Image 1: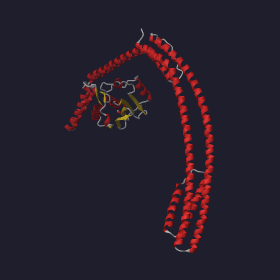
Image 2: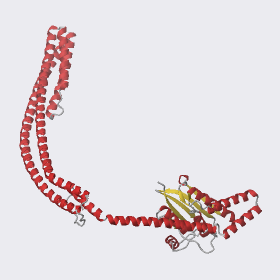
Image 3: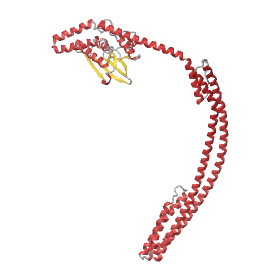
Image 4: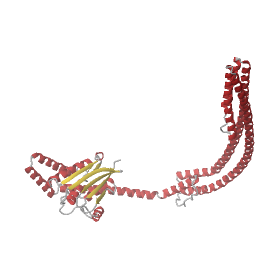
Length: 502
């Protein structure tokens, strides 16, 4: 019986196959049309730019002519004033002088060639000299200084002639340059139009050919996809994988179809693996519960090794006999706190702060027994002590450090407890400066082939192996424990790695 999903897939593929060629042909045709229109637009803008250039040439010629006319007006007003000395002539002179300067300032030839720029610069310099000579002439006329008046008038008239000659030359240079540029631009534009039209025609033909070839190639994998989709719809999943020939949409569809077939084939296998994983999780939970029950039984059976309890109480009796009640009370309070932490098995999970407090009590008791022979140092990051941990994970490690590290050494004993953050882990370090270990001993302990406890040890019944096992089960990871040592008589360090809470 066909599955509805596969029937829908077959219909969708058939629809895609029937319209793909038309869509591709329409796409390439539209692309060619767009290219053609864009080129027409470019031609239009080139012609518009050409018209703007012509307008600029015309505007420049008008400005040059206006400059020449303003110069004539200035010269005429100066002569009229020299002849009549009328106030109107003087006013007209200054008005024409202002207009001449404005026209001169409105000209801009910075984008022209060097010859035109030099000519324009000469006109500016001569204009300044000419207007200055005119001002001096008028001033000499008003002051009736005949000799100075004549000299300045001759100088102004001479410069006037130079200016008109330079303006005429500048106008001719502009016309000659503009005419040459215009002819060259028109020739290039005409050639560009012919070449562009030919290229567009070739592109259109090639584009149509590519479109036809591409659609023919596209239909072949689509037909194969339709055939295999029909087989899948009939329930036959043993079909060969489609050949993915490209990375376009057809390639993506073919790859997705192949992935779908592989997913269906492996569905039962994934279900089986999921069930097996669930069973493994249940076994892990049962194993963890077994370890917890085993540790609890050892606590209840031991509730302090008789030898350790005897020595502890004996030390308390001696202390009460030798000293006053206050220190005895403190000692007995630490002993009581320690026993209470060890024998209270209602909580299998505690906090790192409670574990550190238990270690503090234990080290105090040990130091009373051994007359403060062990220096105990702590380096604790207070932001990390509220994390939840399995109970009784630190005291056994401290106990091992005393029994196997610093007991009976000939130098001052130091045990250091550190809690700090390392990336996404909380690292707990117990370091001693005792007898140390060889690499063979460390390897044996890490592999579990060497017991950490030895006969006659005064321990509480909880071994290091049990601590490691409970941590591995609690955090569901293997890398929770490490030991380092520089060698004999150079101390050891036990490291516990606890994941940071999410």
